Length: 368
View 1 (spheres, rainbow, N blue to C red):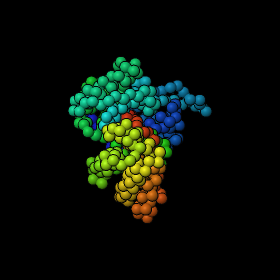
View 2 (view 1 turned 90 degrees about the vertical axis):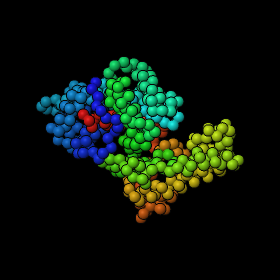
View 3 (view 1 turned 120 degrees about the vertical axis):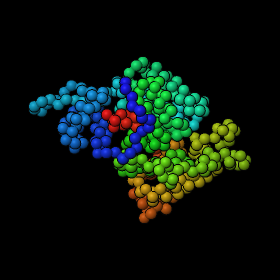
View 4 (view 1 turned 30 degrees about the horizontal axis):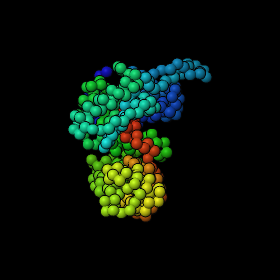
């Protein structure tokens, strides 16, 4: 398969053609099997344009024809569906301690998952581990040649170009890389069906790493707005908990972590807080208020329709969301928070890997 010399996802404002293309992809994904005529009726795009899109996607082997629909008179409408067999995708997250991956088809149906410890430190070592992971996933899926269409990777600590070039040369497919926050944000926006249309402010983790995903498909991140840059990790829940434990404050987090400082995680803090541990509850309230302050500021600045909390801290539920909502309501201009949906992410630990797979699927349609 001929590959293109690209190494990152497209986050520019989508053209009218791009938006129509993604409408077609979304509709075929949801419907499974559908006719060109029905696509035209539902999307409002004229049948000639739809036929042009469909013909191009068939030529690129992204979709395929599947017989004819029942005719109400005249020529029977041709049915089309996603070409899942020839368009499998691997989405990968290079996390702090783990490398997580999902194996999906172009419709984002997950068939397998895999994770492995991240032991390498340099980009070469990490990329070698990615190769081992991908080979393991392909072997598990019984794929030897063809069938894997693209790989999406979410990371922020390594050389994107080196990773994409090495994987592209090794596996002969297009490879796209982006920061993990963008992958998670786009994945949540387009896979989480509870999020309404409109601009989305996504907050990744308790240190306030922000990104705005505009309704046009454009991304605003810390690379082009300093206001979205994360805070220092010392302001996060884990560091606050470690500081309390180090000072000898009595808390069930010591027992839950096996009395090992390195075992203190957001999971441990959440579990302690849900058990009414006062120290853990105080940390959650403190972090919630801090995030609320940051979110209120960003809401006033970017005026999003929705705010989504992800990156792990959202698992604390109302323990963290309650203080956030209260603070945002208090500090947003003209009580703007009353019009905003503030909700937890729904993809959990797979937000980055699923988001990378989604963006990879989107990318090959946009480039068709």
